[in-house]
Image (cartoon, rainbow, N blue to C red):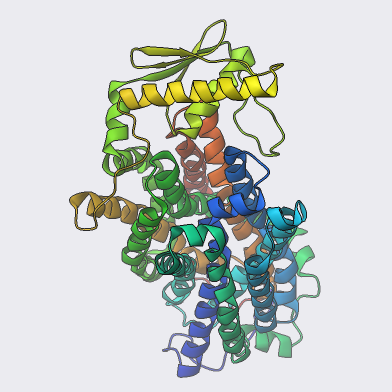
Length: 559
């Protein structure tokens, strides 16, 4: 091993100084604001779909809004490369300032951006461009924040100190939910859907001002500062990180054996659970947001619990346990959500089985990422109607026009290809009306009944959702410290950022849209859970076999 970078002039095992606590707090608070900006879009995806993709049908609006949301995640690894390189070459502090400015300004502009009705196709194009900028900024944010805090933390307490960074994503989501709920309550649902959705985006300019002020008061990381003074900073961090097998293999292990599983557990416990409540279970949006917010409020302290515990027993056992337990319990937990949030739907699914009998050759993959595909066969139309109603069904091979069977009632679908527009519209309306009537007759609710705050139903839902959040804290609480400890100081920012953002940006960020695609293809509203279960299981196996424990390593080594 090469000569290590000199450590800061203090006992690394000693307590944090007042100044160090200040800069760690500043780093965490700024990251909360940045995540707030990012999650506004995800929480308001349905409304944004109507505002910026109004030329598409309702189902495609939802898909497009989710894909625009996912676009921000897709580019995060590129942000990790760009800003990770800058962070390793010029410093952590100045990179922070750039990322927060890009994120905050992009979010504010969404709040003033004209809709499709005003400027046409330019609206969604600009929106996606802003989402890409947000993703790039966030790609550079996390690695810097985790590295910065870890390089200030006393030896033996890195898990505890970096776990505060881990709370910031959840706290940012929580803050966004509070602002959205407050605005909705203040101006009403109709006004919020029309123009009030812009207010949370506009408020972000205040958060940006506070964040910039805080970041300007921060000091540079002592490890980086000392290394720079000695002239040992990397001149080519990308080449050193990914062009040398000794480091590249650790990057790959960090991705497959840690962040991939951590990401899908994270997004299932927070985002997919929210989409499942509002989409499949038809719980109204305000109630679903309150339920998720309550679970986050209860569960967030466990980030600190598991981060601190990882200093004692290691990072790996906690992360691996979180992946395994999540994979084993997702199906029963989400079925419990159904039985609690919408018991009428659960009862109807048991008493009135729904099937689609159709010729498999005329059934398309029920996912339209471009919004231009036209589903005109009788099978496709039948599945679209059921998917729009959040009805789970089974596929049965048959011949002739597709048929929907609901309990003891069978309804024949139709093919719209070649029909005059007026006739196709009339047939579609009649078919949907007949299916809706049959579903109602067999007990399928149009939406979930209101859930009282003081009811056992409400608290049972909060308990289930809190358990999902605790899984998140198990995999996410210790991971910042572990990623920092896997790589040397001179290329740490770059090396840890890429696997983190490929895992969270790609495997995690694409979970909602991919889960919906799987559900649409199979007809079973629970089958989207196979996505996180498979990847969490892969991470458990790879992590247990090949990833080494890191809690006792010297993070000041240069290579």
